[in-house]
Amino acid sequence: MDNEKRYRLKPDEWKLVDAYRNDKDQHSLLAKECNSVGIDVDSVSHYWYKSQKFSIFAKPNEFTRDDFLNSIEALISKYSPSYPQIDYPKRTDGHLLIINPADVHIGKYADALETGEMYNVEIARKRVIEGVTGILRHAEGFPVDRILFCIGNDILHTDNTMGSTTRLTPQDTDGKWYRHFTTALELYVQCVEMLMQIAPVDCVHSMSNHDYMSGFHLAHALKSWFRNTNGVSVDPHPQHRKYYAYGSSLIGLSHGDGAKKNNLPLHMAQEEPQMWAKSKHRYWYLHHLHHKQRYQFMSSFDNIGVTIEFLRSPSGTDSWHATKGFCGSTNSKAVEGFIHSKENGQIAHLTYIF
Image (cartoon, rainbow, N blue to C red; front, top):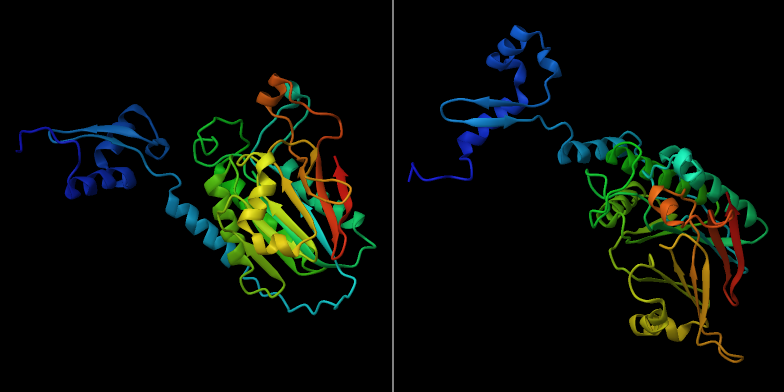
């Protein structure tokens, strides 16, 4: 058996590999070899080690999964949220404010020389803050008693360490994946802290094609952040279609890359029959396309039907979209919001254009 080929290392052999990976300062053979040719041993990131028993390719783990999880814990623990309880005024004429910064794509990189505009992590962050504050200004004058803050929907541009989407489509990226994640978390926290001063905030996450796993983890991190806050709820669950009721409105949320839009009214009626029966006004707010589309289904003089809207994105045009000619109009980049009254459904459409 000892002479047969083996394709897996034994536990004691793995220990030796780890020793060579992580303890190069004490690896005298490496240090001696580097010194003989004038190479700083600290600058060596990986190397081959060959002996009578082993041929080892040693590469230190620069940033492991555990390092990432520890960094998230450190980020959250350094600011242990202890928000004072807010006593919101009771309103009989309250309205729902929906704020939906769709398809932000934090981590996307676009160069103005190639695409006609710059887009990077910092621009993405600033546009979300500017868009949310702009929607709040547009909503002044409406007595808001609840806020629906839509999260997810390709908030992150990639979903792994390789700079690609969930389905491994390569992307042009600005910086490291863990910087994208922490920037997105800090951005969401900043937005929710702003919104919770006005009214209770319900954050609802939508799974999406660029960041199917990372976006899910981000929503859970946000839920943990506000776990002790009375005025904030976070729905991080992975259902592709979600429903939210306010007054006479039934609101469906989905990224827009799943079920066909023509089938969404039926999905709504089948998946939430009780909410459907209690509602008079029904809407779907979708994303994914980065530009505005609006449809009315089953509407007539006596039947309001179901309204389906694809929302615009604040994201810049990257190389692929510019090459294909998917550049949009001059006012295509925006953050959108809506006002719903308890009795009359959607009564205002709010848009902040960049």
